[in-house]
Length: 76
Image (cartoon, rainbow, N blue to C red; front, side, top):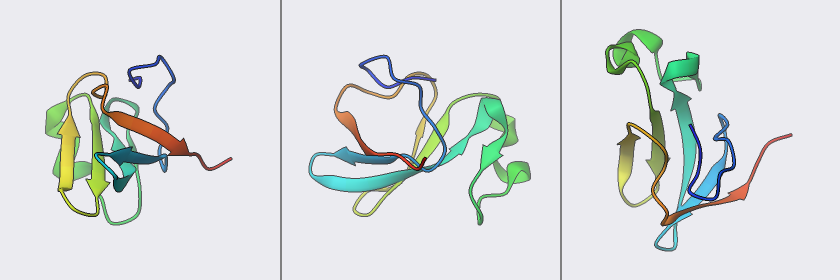
């Protein structure tokens, strides 16, 4: 899974959509989930990522993340 610019999406990435901040909380195809997001709740989706935004709530991206979502911070 990648951002529009080709950068690989990683768990914990901080992103921005329309001036609203969010965090990548799950990468389903890689079975990576942040605390509080249980694999059993989401594995039926098979692929994609979940991003939790302050304003919009939880958004599911099935394929690559839309071009309006920008990575602005990444955990090392």
